[in-house]
Length: 120
Image 1 (cartoon, rainbow, N blue to C red):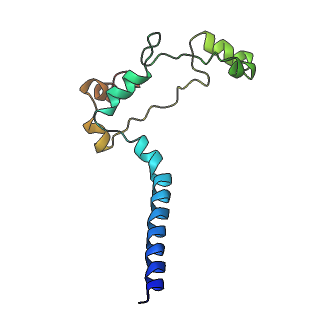
Image 2: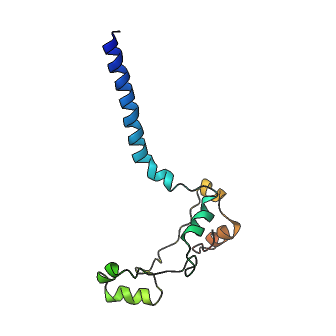
Image 3: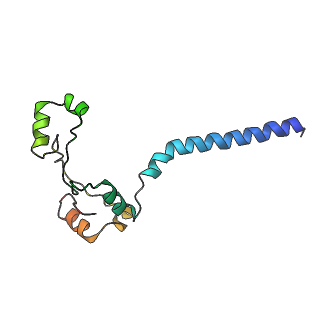
């Protein structure tokens, strides 16, 4: 193999590896960011809970831009503490074995009773 052929081959392999890495990060990056691990439930709950809102409490978006596009009916629902659109569809628990391993007994009891879980 001549030196030029060797350079072209190495450059082609390196380029393919870089392109594969970029494609992999683009496709699988969002999946890794949302992957549930046993310790992530408490971290997410602590990060998302604000002092004024507890888990399961609806807090409306009062941003002026959001409010400008909102109907009076939706605003009335928000003001009464309801989540617009109801959010009252049929609850179906996640019974995946991987999910179940990281689940507390209290949460499993709520799911088994057909309730939407309010505990991690």
